[in-house]
Image: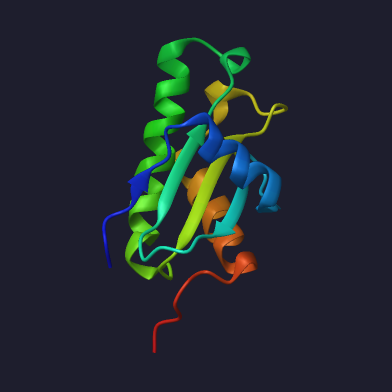
Length: 116
């Protein structure tokens, strides 16, 4: 599988927000859309209202690290945006909570290749 590329442009995010399918976990939300390429795209969005820069960066690091655990199992041609839920307290989020949510979202979206 090709390495996942990051979404950076505003129009890329807005396209996935408008056309993508919404999935929700306990601390994160995801928008998932199939794209017409052979590579996957990942976007991370944490609101400035969530906390200070070091707190937002910590959440983004946790999201990226958890995504890497599933990167090889995801089918090709998927664009994903992860958002932090507004009701979540940013200091109380753990690696395990994010891992549980990502696994739940990916299984619900049926984008994981099942191991035989």
